[in-house]
Length: 230
Image 1: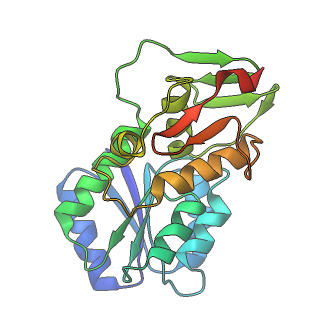
Image 2 (image 1 turned 135 degrees about the vertical axis):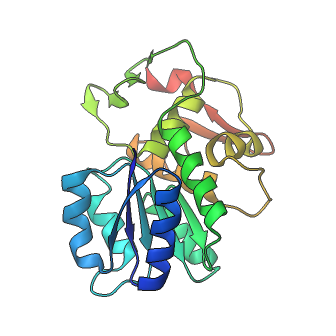
């Protein structure tokens, strides 16, 4: 039974979500304040964390920032505001997805299952590891090394890198990446893919002004340049 941590200060909403997820075979722990959440997440390593953004004492963004380097499993945000800025901030600090309140239980369940499928890496592929120049990617351990130095990636960043590195020197369209990574069609406005590419570039020491490792090919998408890793 997979373990979900729900951090939500609305007691009634938290109870409803907990009951629904438990009825769908998840074990659910609820915290009503953000103050205890970082220690709980790092100690218990739940399979999924659901964070309300507006929490007493410690907000959801701050919790995510504190744990993200040591917690690589999915983090979903609950937000009462349909704000592009909230969504971008959440993605930039390592969130995997976000749900806009009022919460529709079956939509929440679908989103949870979607991020779990991604992190469990159920997509069929024959390769378990890749080595491209100084870059090494191990699928089983989900470890990445560049010039023998370990690179800390979130689960979503790892999957994006794996997707691009398995298709080197060939532009991958934003539509394709969005469908593979987010699990739904690109609507022309969602910046999720762009944010994650930007974060990945920074961690892999790419030039953020003139990227040459993960290049932007205008009108076609993103290209993983194999020669840049030599």
